[in-house]
Image 1 (cartoon, helix red, strand yellow):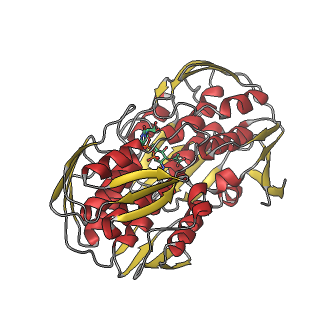
Image 2 (cartoon, helix red, strand yellow):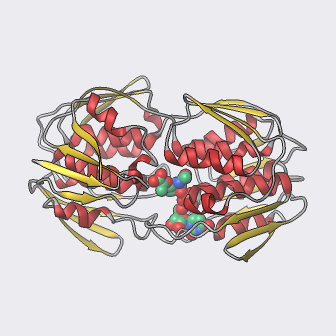
Image 3 (tube, protein in one colour):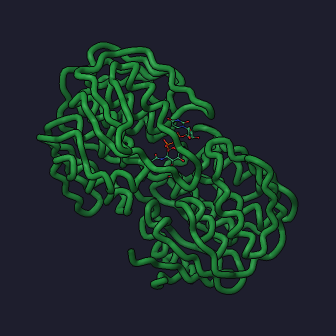
Length: 422
Ligand code: EPU
């Protein structure tokens, strides 16, 4: 694989307007949901990302016809099989969201176990528990999860896990239950906006999903689903990343086409830190401020709490603020991969179990650093924008999985950032 790096010359405030792309984490399960019907589904505002391209290939390997043109994906799953390309599916954790649709439509599935991932073990026990409650049977054979179950039936399912609800697990049960006989009630469902977007798409296909966005979701199964057209919500994590980017460079930014109502916890923390951030319609506006920023403590939580996917970026802001802030990661157990890399730039961070103690206010100075996972990579780029001198972020393919042309977007805002072969 050809690998790229970013060369960043830090110290320049961002300014201008940036437009947010469609949500990766909404688009992936919505694309998988198109497997539930033989008819054509048209999905707009899909971000052009390597994870989305993976999902296109996975759907094709299951027999669907897929076209991806501009930001629109057209999927026609007239005839599908339960068995896709092992290697493709293994590569992307989110591919687990084909399990629910395959079980719902075919009553059979064979997917490779999503491999251990750098941000923690990421088990799928809750997905399997939920589908089993609907009557599916699973065995693990030769590295595959093999599901059978003929036709599924509605059931009551409690999906609260060790650390709380599961986002993709909730999606999988909603998708399978849409074609099951009878009524399914999910208790302790994930409330993330991406779950609501999936429910809206399913309902546009003729499903009967109620309560998405709350901890109790009720799905009344229907005989079949039909084709539908849908526009994916904006990516709240991309929007949050740009808001933090504005703050770390002491810049001013209008973040267009975001959904500020999806970002309550992030905007609240930014304000608490002293960042001047407001909303104008669907835009988020970060104003340059000369105020001294204050350290804030952050604990990641399921929605509507502070998102784990913005923890790493926020840590960079805290590095620049004199004082101590305490950042606690409650969703994934190993999501501090960015910390040793940030320390190469001169950061002082102590890790104590799930907590990072950040001693902010020391100047950062550029260095070669390496990206490890998607959100950690975004944090390293922000640190490079704030640091003095040149930072080289290697392995930016992690970033390309989830941010559409981030380097181009940043360059248009005045950042000095170049993509170079590694
Ligand atoms: N968990 C279990 N058992 C399960 C499923 C999850 O114990 O069967 C645990 C996980 O290990 C984790 C917690 O439950 O500790 C929450 O995981 P969840 O299932 O909610 O995560 P996910 O659905 O696999 C999605 C996003 C992640 C995001 C999380 C949390 C997609 C494709 N991925 O993952 O996004 O961090 O929800 O909000 O939607 C990212 O975009 O960088 C990313 C990692």
